[in-house]
Length: 137
Image 1 (cartoon, rainbow, N blue to C red):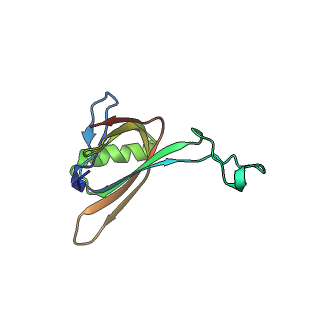
Image 2 (image 1 turned 45 degrees about the vertical axis):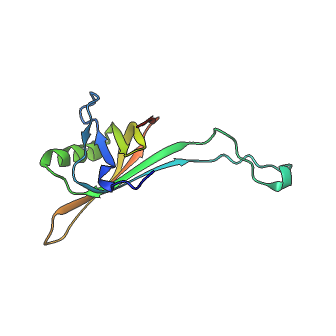
């Protein structure tokens, strides 16, 4: 895979719950991470005392982080609403030349910052809240 522009990695939300996704505005950096916990089943008779793991077990999770600026009052209000109300919505992470990861996420953190001579910026963290799907591009 050739190098891709970071701006092409998109974070979208189904803000109405009706399956229509809109891009979260003003993200300058984004990170998407998938984790899979392992289940250790090593015992005293494990071959050579090497660790053994149980295939297909353990919890899977995903985390999305992003930072940037809000382009308008509506996008700021939507995200603010979700954090204060604990709303879980379907989000999409579009990775160029790879695919789209979609599913329910909860906003676990939002930080606001700003300099006296600049704009107000934010950092957002989403945690998966259910099964995710993947569609290759």
